[in-house]
Image (cartoon, rainbow, N blue to C red):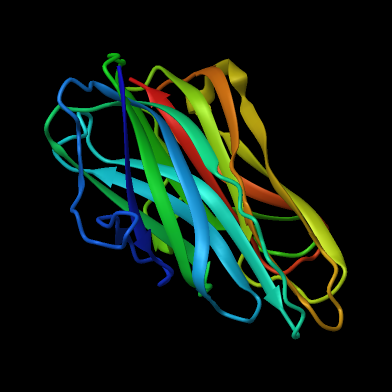
Length: 280
């Protein structure tokens, strides 16, 4: 059996989490409550829009933070989208933003609360609106932990930057994978905090390395791509969907480093977020 629940929130203040307690009519209904009989969340569905936009170069990457007594294995951090916006004139456009689907294995406790918060790190983009939906099921799952790091790629051609120590502008340190068996999913996403107003484009990938990967050595993953052509008037605005890759990467005790790399023509300050699904 499955149950479907949603909550919504407006957010956008940099590096500040917004708690999702509203329903579709903008009425406050409180946190998610795990339905009676539910043992897990199997899918997270997210829709994004904007109730107010900042008409300038801005953007960033977004994270969902779950906590509360309903989360059997504690707090979870999942990157879910990126954003880039460039507005130089009076050319109106309508943007259709796709729904984001992220399959997960989150054990929950029936009848308890889940606190869901969304946040953006980058440059002020106005007032994004998000609706987050959970697919609860009666199926039991093992113990999985979701963690996230995000930061800038440093900008420039063939630029790179270590992002494995930061989240939402704060230094939180590299991952120590002691106690985990394997990485079973990678979730990567890019955004751009200051897109340039000239013809440009780039691709962003991330490199994971460290003794914790054992014989694997290193893992390289695509994160996203961006193209900009706007030299006089008009505007460009959009959301980046995450790259989701199911994996089987055995890990051992040790530090995992994450470096974001940019190649192409400088587009401003691209950002990257990396999320891991870790089996305990």
